[in-house]
Length: 138
Image (cartoon, rainbow, N blue to C red; front, side):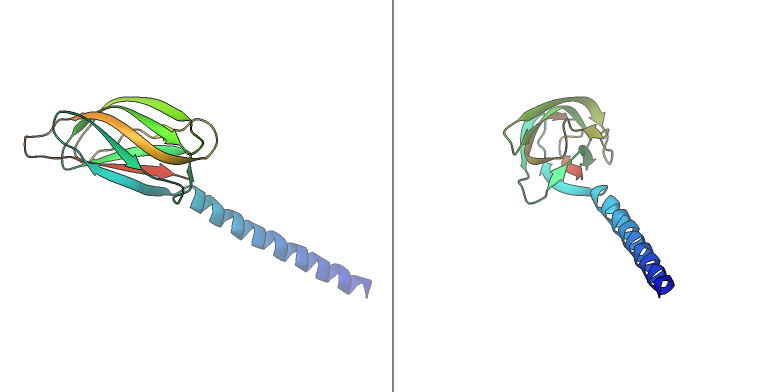
Protein backbone atom coordinates (compact mmCIF):
# COMPACT_ATOMS: atom_id res chain seq x y z
CA UNK A 1 0.00 0.00 0.00
CA UNK A 2 2.82 2.42 0.91
CA UNK A 3 4.51 1.60 -2.43
CA UNK A 4 1.37 2.57 -4.37
CA UNK A 5 1.05 5.85 -2.43
CA UNK A 6 4.73 6.71 -3.12
CA UNK A 7 4.28 6.02 -6.85
CA UNK A 8 1.13 8.15 -6.98
CA UNK A 9 2.89 10.98 -5.13
CA UNK A 10 5.85 10.75 -7.54
CA UNK A 11 3.51 10.89 -10.55
CA UNK A 12 1.66 13.84 -9.06
CA UNK A 13 4.94 15.70 -8.46
CA UNK A 14 6.11 14.93 -12.00
CA UNK A 15 2.83 16.24 -13.43
CA UNK A 16 3.15 19.42 -11.35
CA UNK A 17 6.70 19.99 -12.60
CA UNK A 18 5.63 19.46 -16.22
CA UNK A 19 2.70 21.89 -15.85
CA UNK A 20 5.04 24.45 -14.28
CA UNK A 21 7.53 24.07 -17.16
CA UNK A 22 4.81 24.54 -19.78
CA UNK A 23 3.38 27.58 -17.97
CA UNK A 24 6.88 29.10 -17.56
CA UNK A 25 7.63 28.80 -21.27
CA UNK A 26 4.30 30.42 -22.16
CA UNK A 27 4.83 33.40 -19.86
CA UNK A 28 8.38 33.88 -21.16
CA UNK A 29 7.04 34.08 -24.72
CA UNK A 30 4.33 36.55 -23.69
CA UNK A 31 6.68 38.81 -21.77
CA UNK A 32 9.19 38.88 -24.62
CA UNK A 33 6.86 39.98 -27.42
CA UNK A 34 6.89 43.34 -29.22
CA UNK A 35 3.62 45.26 -29.33
CA UNK A 36 2.78 48.24 -31.53
CA UNK A 37 1.87 51.14 -29.23
CA UNK A 38 0.96 53.73 -31.84
CA UNK A 39 2.09 55.71 -34.86
CA UNK A 40 2.31 59.27 -36.15
CA UNK A 41 2.44 60.69 -39.67
CA UNK A 42 5.20 63.28 -39.51
CA UNK A 43 5.39 66.57 -41.36
CA UNK A 44 8.40 68.09 -43.09
CA UNK A 45 11.12 69.97 -41.22
CA UNK A 46 11.64 70.03 -37.44
CA UNK A 47 8.67 68.69 -35.53
CA UNK A 48 7.42 67.38 -32.18
CA UNK A 49 4.73 64.74 -31.74
CA UNK A 50 3.20 62.70 -28.93
CA UNK A 51 1.83 59.17 -28.90
CA UNK A 52 -0.57 58.56 -26.01
CA UNK A 53 -0.52 54.99 -24.76
CA UNK A 54 -2.24 54.61 -21.38
CA UNK A 55 -2.66 51.75 -18.97
CA UNK A 56 -4.49 49.31 -21.23
CA UNK A 57 -1.35 48.13 -23.03
CA UNK A 58 0.47 47.14 -19.83
CA UNK A 59 4.07 47.51 -18.73
CA UNK A 60 7.20 47.68 -20.87
CA UNK A 61 10.96 47.32 -20.50
CA UNK A 62 12.12 48.27 -24.02
CA UNK A 63 11.07 50.52 -26.89
CA UNK A 64 12.00 50.89 -30.55
CA UNK A 65 10.89 53.02 -33.49
CA UNK A 66 10.11 51.80 -37.01
CA UNK A 67 10.02 54.35 -39.84
CA UNK A 68 7.95 53.94 -43.02
CA UNK A 69 7.61 55.93 -46.30
CA UNK A 70 10.49 58.40 -45.72
CA UNK A 71 13.68 58.74 -43.67
CA UNK A 72 13.83 60.83 -40.49
CA UNK A 73 16.45 62.19 -38.14
CA UNK A 74 15.25 61.34 -34.61
CA UNK A 75 16.73 63.72 -32.03
CA UNK A 76 15.24 62.59 -28.73
CA UNK A 77 12.19 61.17 -27.02
CA UNK A 78 10.70 61.62 -23.56
CA UNK A 79 8.81 58.73 -21.98
CA UNK A 80 6.08 59.79 -19.52
CA UNK A 81 5.26 57.03 -17.02
CA UNK A 82 1.96 56.46 -15.23
CA UNK A 83 3.59 57.20 -11.87
CA UNK A 84 4.42 60.78 -12.99
CA UNK A 85 8.10 60.20 -13.73
CA UNK A 86 9.70 61.11 -17.07
CA UNK A 87 12.72 59.61 -18.84
CA UNK A 88 14.49 61.67 -21.50
CA UNK A 89 16.33 59.56 -24.08
CA UNK A 90 18.77 61.02 -26.58
CA UNK A 91 18.37 59.16 -29.88
CA UNK A 92 20.41 61.28 -32.35
CA UNK A 93 19.96 58.74 -35.13
CA UNK A 94 19.14 58.93 -38.83
CA UNK A 95 16.57 56.23 -39.45
CA UNK A 96 16.16 55.31 -43.13
CA UNK A 97 12.86 54.60 -44.87
CA UNK A 98 11.90 51.07 -43.78
CA UNK A 99 14.47 51.12 -40.96
CA UNK A 100 14.26 51.06 -37.21
CA UNK A 101 16.02 52.59 -34.24
CA UNK A 102 18.22 50.77 -31.79
CA UNK A 103 16.39 48.96 -28.99
CA UNK A 104 15.98 51.42 -26.11
CA UNK A 105 16.16 49.98 -22.59
CA UNK A 106 13.87 51.77 -20.17
CA UNK A 107 15.20 52.59 -16.72
CA UNK A 108 13.73 50.87 -13.69
CA UNK A 109 11.51 47.83 -13.66
CA UNK A 110 8.51 47.31 -15.91
CA UNK A 111 6.41 50.43 -15.83
CA UNK A 112 3.20 51.65 -17.40
CA UNK A 113 3.87 54.21 -20.13
CA UNK A 114 1.34 57.00 -20.38
CA UNK A 115 2.77 58.78 -23.46
CA UNK A 116 5.96 59.33 -25.47
CA UNK A 117 7.06 62.65 -27.01
CA UNK A 118 9.37 62.73 -30.07
CA UNK A 119 11.56 65.46 -31.57
CA UNK A 120 12.70 64.82 -35.15
CA UNK A 121 13.11 66.23 -38.62
CA UNK A 122 12.38 64.52 -41.92
CA UNK A 123 14.87 63.53 -44.60
CA UNK A 124 12.65 62.63 -47.56
CA UNK A 125 11.38 64.45 -50.60
CA UNK A 126 8.87 67.26 -50.34
CA UNK A 127 5.81 65.03 -50.82
CA UNK A 128 7.14 62.13 -48.72
CA UNK A 129 5.64 62.01 -45.24
CA UNK A 130 7.19 59.49 -42.89
CA UNK A 131 5.21 57.35 -40.51
CA UNK A 132 6.89 56.70 -37.17
CA UNK A 133 5.70 53.60 -35.30
CA UNK A 134 6.40 53.11 -31.60
CA UNK A 135 6.88 49.52 -30.44
CA UNK A 136 7.18 48.28 -26.84
CA UNK A 137 8.47 45.03 -25.42
CA UNK A 138 7.01 43.50 -22.28
